[in-house]
Length: 340
Image (cartoon, rainbow, N blue to C red):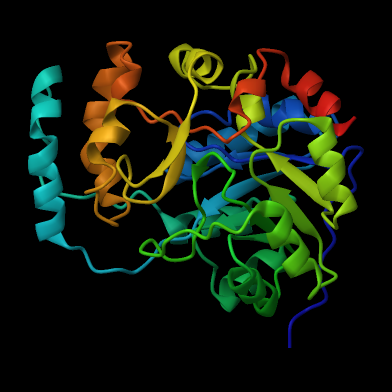
């Protein structure tokens, strides 16, 4: 039998700052969202346990308000080395253009899943969210025992029901409008095209648990529509990327304002993600294999070289459909304005 749901922390504003991995969700950004009356979220994806511990400590030094940590759930899947080799060969000219060597087939474990669970059980935070799947029941029990509110992420009604059946306390519903990775529970799944509003309606009809609407939210009017439709909170990500507290490179911030058109692609990481369209997505979206995190580790040196060269045509530029509304204003201002 599942334990009674633990409520989300009391908030002044119905806003969660989306966890954005790769350095965007800095402790300063997380604290700014929390200090404004929402909940800021650290992104543990791609971090070592020591880096995550340092970010938790840094965030606590900046706020006494509730905040949380998001974990990427690792997936046990076979590695198709032949498909990866074919994709690496296709990328050869791109690497040569930047004078970068193709990495060898020695893929690293960047999840540190057990270590991060252990860290969060010994040094708990108010909220822990999960993306790309669900934890085990034992891990749920462990984190619940230390007082954390536990939140799943779903892209379909079926994924939402799985999170609810596991006994999680709330569910983020990620619509296809969202920037960055689609949070499908299996990397090989084709992401659902069910719009966020319809996903929310479908899941709200089956549960009274808190539902957090996410994807392409860029105006106060949209926030109000989703709350009126049954969302308990909304989660914003792209809207925070251009803030001064964000750790996003300036090139990325500028592209959100100057470029148009987004696409869903596996080309950068092997998982579908929504990004600004560029030369790389045009060239490689049709052939990128569903291998995560291997494709991301393969393309990493190329993307770092492109960033160093100031070349947006070979960079991942995660962006939701409302990216043009993102503003270079303090995160607290953005959060309060969206809350209305």
